[in-house]
Amino acid sequence: MKQNVDVQVVLATPADMEDFFDDANEAAEQFNFIVHVLYDRADDDISASSMERLFQYCWETWHRYPDLTDIDEDELLDWVDHTLATWDDADNQDNL
Image (tube, rainbow, N blue to C red; front, side, top):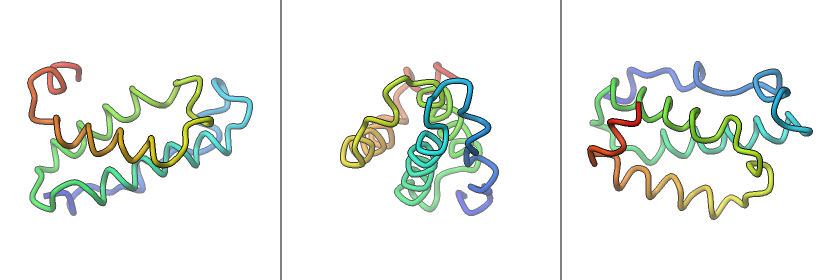
């Protein structure tokens, strides 16, 4: 159950992003936007371990993505929707 996962633990700080982005504040805000939307849109009955793997996948995908601060919210929403729609696929599970 996703409510057993503390989303606050996953959120990025500017210090987490400063080695990779000129604007670490903006990068952290963008990443945190993705995390919150991912959590909000995940099924309520998703297992805690799946939710944690989704967050890990999110971190691995975005925390050093050079254009993170240039991507608009609609594109990030599309990424979240696509990720959630395909999460049960073996390819996504094997990437972690």
